[in-house]
Image (cartoon, rainbow, N blue to C red; front, side):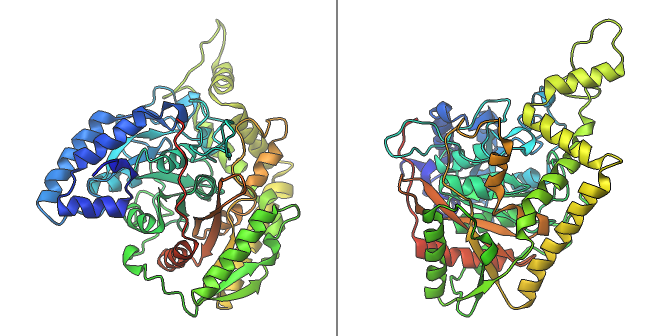
Length: 495
């Protein structure tokens, strides 16, 4: 078998079980692809020794039989996950030199199931961004190009390195995290599949926190079946995370029948935004027709508080970030500024944070501190929390009325060029999350499935939103959509 790195998880798993290939061969193929793809800047901490050691152990385990589904499969880990003895910087200068003495629960579960870690992946600093342009490692670059244009495009954010690596076949799959769309938006931009599970389905322990009531880990894969395989390994109750749900994890792959006859799919009228590109509108309509042809019933629905979602999110998320990032003070670990004679602890905090945090993180911390301050707590933060409750109720009402899943666009556009959205107008960048933040505010599962190309040949994704804890049913609906869309496009190799 040639070009083993181009396999998906399910194909590679089956080939490993049949003895047609070894994990060491798979891993070697990915390591070679990573070395040749420096131009994408996707992998920022390579771990070839760990990878080959785990691959050898996986081969032994497979020989003995009864190896778990993820055993022997090479994957990338987003730099937000703490990995024992391996730099875990959250793409920030303030965590320079930090090598945790422990493993995040999700990466530990993947390792316990035999998955092979190839290294750590680029991302926006502390997961704050929609384009992977806020990273201390520099920009991650999409493997896709607009026709014959050489302009570098964003792979999306904050899980941009994960998206670029999976799309360019540097790894078979990758972990991502999603606070306001950071799995689904980059998946849509790069023509891959990304699922954010229900809040509480995956443990947050050992994942560097951005906004604790919104963050959730999930897989970024080459197709829906692979997402089902990897998600099952990542999920499960964790006593170390008080928000982790004590629920059994179903066999998600076993639920992929593709049969969605009689399912009710909601189309929310509030997602028809002013200025939405005609291509996105057309793709959305085509997606609804595909699901209808597969036997689903298409129902127009209303989610009336949608227009308040983005402002509420950009109050709640920075508020939680301001609280979470207070721990980075230069005292215990990470970067500490050089102090002048006579400087005290206040100067140390100020200088360390000024040097250690990038502009976007500083901006969000300041917004968060402002909305939590004495005079503004009720006016902003409490009001945003009330709006969040109303958004959650909108979804509850729709699901109570018998809707099984909701179909929306994943992003308001195809991938844009790096540097095209300037720092002068951060709100323009924040609008990228317009279709995805509601899902985080309501704690629901959402998946992005590649469904077509725009006129410049760039991928476009559709999003399906499911009932809480019903990832199996959501994945099955996504599987039906994927089968109907028949998306097989890959980026033309230029790197």
